[in-house]
Amino acid sequence: MLTFVALHRALGDNFSLPPKRFLVTTFIPSAWVDDTLISERKVGLSGYLNKLLQSPEYLKSTLLTQFLDPTGRSRAFNLEDALPSTLSKGAVEDFGKDLKAETSQKFIAAGYYEDWATSPSPSAIDYDKFDVIFFAFATPSSSYGLSWDSGSTTMLKTLVSGAHKSGTKVVLSVGKSDLYKGRSIVDYHSDRWLGTTFINALSSAVNEYNLDGKRYSYDVQCCLTHVYSSLGIDIDWEYPNDPGAGQAYSSSDSANFLLFLKSLRSKFGSSKIISAAVTQLPWLGSNGKPLTSISAYTDELTYVNIMNYDVNGSSSKPGPNAPLSNACDTSSQPTATAVAAFKQWTKAGAPANKLLLGLPIYGYVSKSKATKLSGSFKSPGVSDEEADVGKTVGQAHPRVREPIKDGKEGTEAGDLSSWYGQQIPFKSLVASGALKKNSSGTYGAANGYTRAWDQCSNTPFLYNVARETVVTYDDTTSLADKAAYAKDVGMAGTTGILCRMPFVRAWEFSEGRPKGLASIIYAPQMVL
Image (cartoon, rainbow, N blue to C red; front, side, top):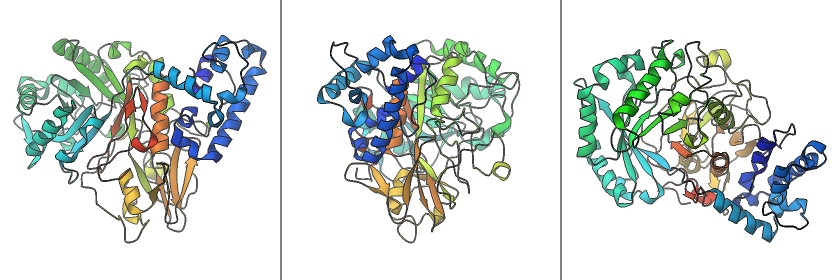
């Protein structure tokens, strides 16, 4: 069964879908709680269908006919049957059957556990909720071995023991950004850091700690990440031939990167995972523009993980952290959304079923009196003083290394002033009192905040003019929309980046779809 988004894409029509929310969200029961949003969406979708039905070009379209009656039954079809809040019992049952048939591909659920986390302990984690856990970090030593923080190897052993009992894989993240500044993948490809000594050290760690993989990270800075072992390798080199993250770069970076991928695939064989974490645009070629043909790269890769977050940081003119779309056509950089990223990578030759969509379980706190989000973006490498919108695309993805606090985050409920200019975990928004959980499993504003919805990016935000505070973030609704979009367009799944979280479970899939909004965000210290 086609969704409205898929129908619109397949027909290639010039009519506009209403920008409020992707239809797939409204098929998740707890999203039906907000009747105002549903009514608004229904009116817009009804208008879209009416335009199609009144158009001679599309009236007799087979796709439209299948959309209106996916079962092919010969019966009169009521337009209301296609609309979210008025689905008939039969239509709901048909939708469930069709959805089950469409979602045989298993999505990947992954998360990070930092070695500085204070809670929950590895023994308290519900491992059944994860396919893969990344343990961060070990760092390369001066002798081409591995260095560990105090107590981290003991923590890792406990993590592995618990994870393997549930069939969850554990991958070691290895890296430290200050070891590599000023160096590019060209250097790594030719020196001892990728030589026998270091690879043997990685392999030894995999064997000693019974790991399923190793992730060698440049701490999400310029960006070389390896995963070595039975799981494979993950390469986090987001900015070849791009000075945006402050690293050394060369016009031959992408060409050398392809040679590097080929050598890795040759070494590890076809059964190993080789994946790459990327931005919304393909890597830059020798001319400084995104590559237009990347099939040679994706032939060597198992997955391409699109890091669609940190698009905007904290600012007096806050914008969305992780936009799903540019539905209002107001963004000055419309390439920096999940929808645009999918189109850009597939147009360049990446198979949809190799793409993973990165989801953030955090937001940004800004000192601002804004009551709507900015549609303006700055280009990679441009400072806040030049653009004043806090955008981090083209720069290193920030990572804060300190434990999360328990309980209230400020001196009084709803006080987020100590978070100005920083990332804030979803859990802390609840603990601070800015968000509260509703009986429906969704989250609403509290303590003087207003929860608003940015229809242009399909993300929520909180604002409190009196406190001069704006929070741009993702919640159960927006994450469900992103996950459903990824499934709708045939992506391989989703993966998560967690910031200032001791541990959080990002999403949960049953037959390829979220089990429920109350299960999309999971944290052991948060009763959901």
